[in-house]
Length: 181
Image 1 (spheres, helix red, strand yellow):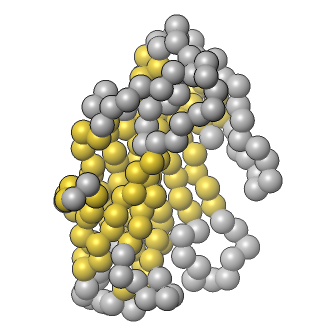
Image 2 (cartoon, helix red, strand yellow):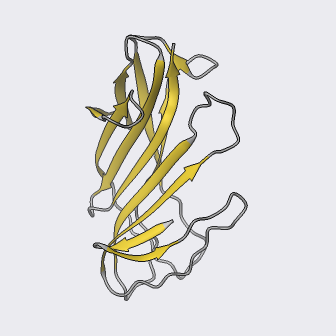
């Protein structure tokens, strides 16, 4: 996990699979901060899916207030895959960037209400060398993006960025999210 303010790293630590992620970091002042975390699933058979994911939260913090980070946490749900998490070659897969913003049971932490300003989505078919933008659309209260599968077998990685009305943003990335047969 890494916390930065501008180009300065304030906190950086690697965590093992059974360690609690509970840093007690004090921010030096009000401003824009970014916290990033990358997770790797090891010890899996060759060809496993979703072996690496990352989350980056970019947010404004007021040093004088005890507030929850306002960013949305996004889970990328590809729809219409078969039981092996595969899409057909040359098909279009609808991906839902399902958003959640969890509250806290701590009454001393303020939570601001705001809405989603924008959602952007990308996909890769070459393990992140090139990312292709795809349009995210809001329809009936649900955001979706269409991902075009390559002509041959392979894997698709997904990324989305959600920005709220205050300018806070979260970027979620899943490498090898699903396969193409």
